Length: 346
Ligand SMILES: [Zn+2]
Image (cartoon, rainbow, N blue to C red; front, side, top):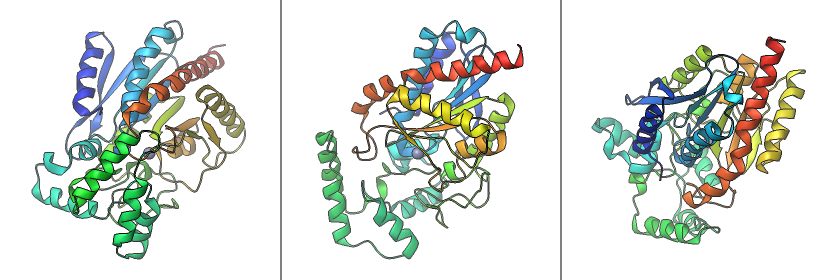
């Protein structure tokens, strides 16, 4: 698994290679959220962010891989524009998903998160989880049995079996945060942005492992850090990596001419990755992509990596193929930035 320590090691490596690095801000628990910049600080800029959802930490590994790949393959393009990579926005959440709550110093917060985590669904069992949150009904033993049965990963059977075994041996699963998506305040950071906040079809009313948009828009320090950083660097395009489903989301109530501009880019991304274009917003709201489209009026894309047949968290054995599929993404981003440079300086 790719964790925060791995990211810090890689950031050190990037610093020694003379790349510009820094922090966009800090998480609820005080961890600096690193960024890496490649290319020129002048000309058009892009932002690529990942792991805003805790259990989707595979996207952090993919994003870090893209940095080296882009440097190596696009030296000419990088002379006239640049990309800011933020590989792990939700550091506290990723640590929770990977390590459990033991690393959290405050015993009250630790216990609070364990309480919330007690109702977390098992893989492929998201409907039961939603039902539990909305109706307050208790999960039954049958539900759990069904969950264990379906948690076996059909693509990587070994991972699934191991996971199912772990569930069977652990009747109180409050210590297993591997399916957690939210922050250390149990807010879903990708519902917390001021873009039709609270109107998401999946939103829930209380702190939860996923889909709680927070008490008000941009209430969370991670969200504010990403907003402030984005407003500072003024990107012309943004990419948000999530998992899973091999899908690309690009719409958020934009009108022409932005609609055609964004559709063309989305089609290019879909063709490069072999992922499916989703032509609609699926009643999402409060996401980073949503905010970029609505407020900054720039093209912004959510790329969901990995085959949907994988159970959450997506196994790391999926990384080589998904990395390969995303190798066309930097070229599309840099191509767009260069076209924008020309429009600005004809
Ligand atoms: Zn996600």
